[in-house]
Amino acid sequence: MSQYLTAALYKFVTLDNYKELQQSILEQCLMLRIKGTLLLANEGINGTIAGAPEDIRAILAYLRQDPRLADLEHKESWADSHPFYRMKVKLKKEIVTMGVQGVDPNDVVGTYVKPEDWNALISDPDVILLDTRNDYEVHIGTFKNAIDPKTTTFREFPQYVADNLDKNRHKKVAMFCTGGIRCEKASSFMKQQGFEEVYHLQGGILKYLETVPKEQSLWEGDCFVFDQRVAVKHGLEVGDHDQCYACRMPLTREEMQSEQYEAGISCPYCFEKLSAEKKDSLRERQKQVQLARMRGQSHIGDKQK
Image (cartoon, rainbow, N blue to C red; front, top):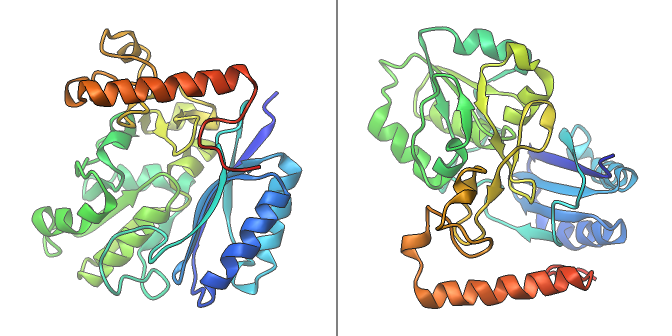
């Protein structure tokens, strides 16, 4: 039975005292033996954390004591082993980095579409369906007929829109991402750019995979997640991918059979790009990781006590 509860959460809301919140939230998470990452900025909170079910529910209750976060939503999934190595609470300029001044989902945002209504929307031939995630995420799964902008970071999304979309020609645009945060901010940006009908998947792919039965789903493949599970599939079960910890690329079982794959060192996507010195350094790191695991100790670099 899976023992670790994972909670993915975010909320766009003005947190003018976000710097003061950092230490108290970190201390509460450490006391509850929770691991993961939370980002705080003036525009809100974002992150994914994991721990024992009662501890996760306790930290969510703690966060919701703040009236500004009283309606903070989260998405749950389970893991057999802990998906994170340590707990971090970081201060940021943005809780999801687009790098464009004045984009504020608290001010203007597109139309939220519930998972159960998503299929009907994206089946409309007049709708342009955009995946707002990074290329390595799209690589392992996306919605049927979705456009891959081939961006390597979310910062590149505004330029993609400028180069490829026309507000006078593309009348209906629907967007999605893993948990909803990137497509929500992207919808705010596009509304500011003059696009009128802009839609985004409420709760993101994770909520869709949790809510929509597999036999009715228009999702194809796995969904990349930013923790040790690497990917999830329908019902939010752990997927079949692993990850190259040299280049972060998600890998299929077939790709891990390649002669260029060496656990923790290289894969077919980065083998030719890594110098011999870099590979030696990664091998030493991997050796230390394995020794720590054999001794039952924390992963090398794990600073949580």
